[in-house]
Amino acid sequence: MYEDSVYAVAKIQGDISSPNLKGIAYFKPFKDGTMVEIEVSGLPGYKNYQLFPIHIHDGKDCDISKNGTFDNVLGHYNPTNENHPYHAGDMPILFSNNGYAYMKFYTTRFKAYEVENKLVIIHEAVKDENTSLFGRKIGCGRINKYTL
Image (cartoon, rainbow, N blue to C red; front, top):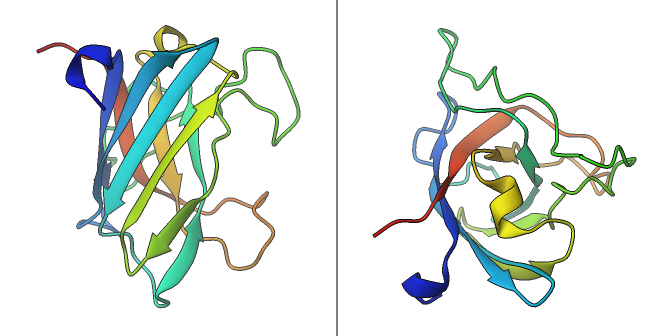
């Protein structure tokens, strides 16, 4: 994305179980919604290809607790009180290729400015195709307004 078109950015870090997890998410106003671009490396896994749920949460920080986890991230961003998977903060699954994932998608579920100061959360890989079951939170990034 061109830097002058980016409204907000989140730098993603891993918890104690995934110390090599690092990534970035860009949020750009586009048409009637938002273009989201996410790149992540260091995703854990015992398989070459795994599915990682990723969401926007209502929390305010990615502080790691004494036990090494993200405990203060609150629930999914869901201003219209929808059922899952229709929360505004529900995003497509990250598809890991040997620990690396990249995706770009367009959504009208939220405007870029509406998710400012919220969190991008990556959950551990799903064990099967039932992506409605989310594991522990292994990655977190606070969405901040982009400034040069």
